[in-house]
Length: 412
Image (cartoon, rainbow, N blue to C red; front, side, top):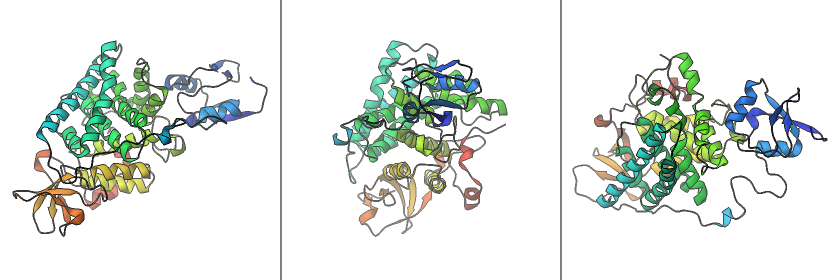
């Protein structure tokens, strides 16, 4: 090994995709990682299987493995000029009605995204060049949707159905990650990266039996343990797609991690979780709560957000990412039905860009214009359960008994 003072780096501290200047060997002289070779999820798992829990490396390589900024090198997330690049902006459509023409185009885009992921799943062990070509254009298409009308794109993503539940979920993950990344004023490259990781984050589940892709199914103990390996399987599947960067693979591997270290597959903490992975973790939790789960219907979106805010206070989510997510879907998510203080029933139509608690609503069975609650005497009293969605409310008793762990596969 190199002739200089060595530093111990735990495997849970290592940033995927990192490379070292020197070869790394174990105590028996067996090569663990060659110089210049990126440390992938698969390589890291192979090292762990040898019983190795830390690496002894030079201080220079320690910084590289941890993702710290070496002297003279810019941080991973930002290129040298990224802060000077113009940031993406969502179009503020105020109380403008939805466009039927735009809705049709958006439905087609979301359906296309679902089809691409479903196709990748069918080819999981041998993805074709044509499938990769189709994939590359999807994040930019979804970004264009969100930029044109983020409110209508969110509602559209809820309405498009598919027999491939996982592919539909991945498409929704991508769209919501894109809009949240824009809200956080990330660069266009980072926004596209968020959309790409959202599309591919669960691709590895296509290597498992079909029940692993249906959140309503109960898993036995061994199956639940296998399920927690799917982020690594997703990274392995994505490794066949050369256009996907190492950084995007890192993000995919970290979607199910938590800031307090209670996530999986590595149990890493916030200081090494990629900012885009923090966004996807929040979107994933929201979709898990609002979609049906084992032996339960989905929860009302408003109640799901209240629960997530509570969990955010316990450091289960990144606070800045949580605020951005809340800002762009509102505390009463777009499409929700609510009761106003005068007893009338309304549907949430658009966000208010200055206050997530006062969206734009349309009163049912009235011909009046949409109401911007931020400048109105009206206010929301409570959300209404829509019987067509089969969602239920989270009671105070339920809220007290719930934890983020319930989002993981249930044991049968």
